[in-house]
Image 1 (tube, rainbow, N blue to C red):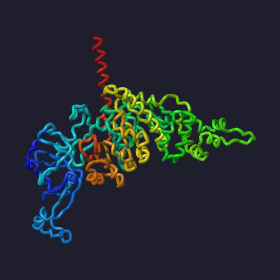
Image 2: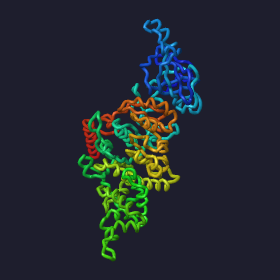
Image 3: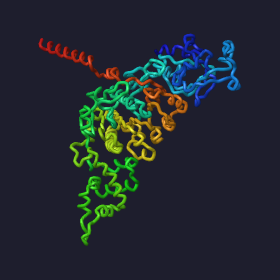
Length: 583
């Protein structure tokens, strides 16, 4: 493949063999704005589409780029008002390609040199081809050379990496892979409007991470789609991650009854003690629960005065009455809340409003006075043992306050533990814990401007991989995510978006993003995605691979006849082993 791709790298003119796929020649452009290519007169515009790849041979280099726009042009502006008569074939042949012609805009992404220490390795573009450099449609071999083959390999620095097939280009049958190690080492994201298949694509990417064992995952499964069974339009029910990887995935749940009713048989039921909840865990819910700054300050004041029992006592009528109620010297009944507010140094109205909001927690069955077990320790035990954890929310998945509270509560403590482990292992790479990827849905609620800098999720995004913890963000509103956080997201996998602000946010901090907006705006509403960033050598539009029986099998899961055959093979091997031992 490499030989085919590079055989003409030093040729200054178009090789004979490439004439059938020739587009035209470079006539103008710049490094910042991209290249203008004048199409050959026999090149049909209808056969081209934005998102297709092209190669440009020039000066001993091959430039690899993407078509980002297609245009009609003319040598005489008057033709637009008074077009020539092209009904006569002779006149048509005279004008087409001379006075009337087509152009495409190509954004150069990579370049490969014939000589030097990095010869034949794709490098970022720092120059452009010269005038009249020949341009051709890229072949499957060229695309495959740039993106690599699926499976284990070594990168340019000699490190072991795993390449995972996410789909194929829209116009050719060649696998497109991403570097999973790079995908996991920085925060990444899947964006797309509602109904485009974000969960389906996210589940597929997580399956790749688990299959190649490049990181361990903690997945906050808001709508119970990742762990056991999910849904897909092309197949109805689809398998969850635990069904595909039964020995590598554990299901934790906040709602044991719901999980068992759906057949997921959870490994552990998570409970959170009132005395373990801190104001920092609740502060993130300010927007959802309509908490004012004064109410947030009151929570910290109660923590200072009452200690860990602040929330339990504050919501307990009997405790308030016992400690602050009763009767005064004149026998009049004392208003317990008023007396409590006076001791806390807070307005009664502030505490009264705060209490009404926090009483919502009493309806969460997973918040209890005395937890049966330490949920944080259980989750950490699984993660540090290399087991991926999916936390199902059951009936609480429809309550955004419950989702935000639990995700924030667990992430704050797990990240602190990882930080301690990494600091203890300073200087010894082998002693560091396996990288942890935390998956969150409705991410803009965690990372919106104004609060992202104060939350643990904003901290993780800004730290990159400092403490071996990164985020996998799944969201339909990228414009709602803080700009600084967006700039730190390494790999962005984007399905169809129709909101102009969301499209603009996806390309925040991306070189050449303006030119790619046309590509994103023309994606189909389902199963097409634009991938760009840290895990891929250049932006690519893919038809996403199916999450179906073939995919399960490629991930190592057997079912049906294949499972029976494997079981029979195992029985025969066991039987043969016993016979030999008897001899």
